[in-house]
Image 1 (cartoon, helix red, strand yellow):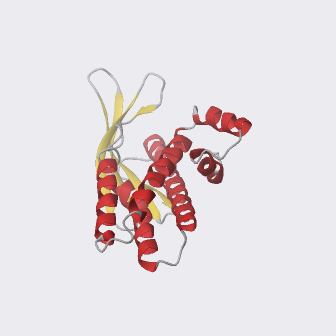
Image 2 (cartoon, rainbow, N blue to C red):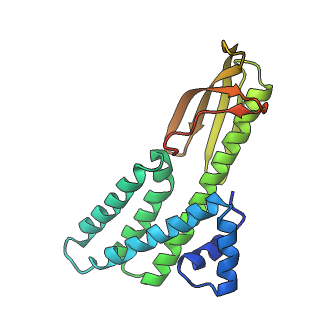
Length: 213
């Protein structure tokens, strides 16, 4: 999980930092992929808002706004897992639509709220991945085949389990374990079967996550 303050990342994405602060953040971003992802999300989300507000006075403005958001989400789906998008991009889009319908919130307040929500959901997703990885390694190292190790993230409402199914040795002499991984998100459940093998450094080489590049 990123150690950088989300508020600092928001200000960096909006070019509101002074030179020493910008240099500090940019130095951290070089070694912090999660923080870089948060900055990218802020900038992408910021680019959606002007297009949405230009359509407020149009009779078909709501429909057009939904179309703009849907197109943006479709582009992101090709780059990330669909479950990730449902968990953080759709709530942001819903916030934009509610702002247009209510008409009581100012542009600046809604923008800030959307960016804060994006940071929170990204942080929760990063914690999910961290817990899943720790549990996966623990299960492969310690659990007998057929036994299950679980994890829970109370902040996101997500929980998961890892169950090693069998242990075998390849013709090349490498030890591997087949395992089942189940993840329960608030609105959906995912289950995968994978194989991890011991590498020369005595750590586990695992298949990439779906949608990873």
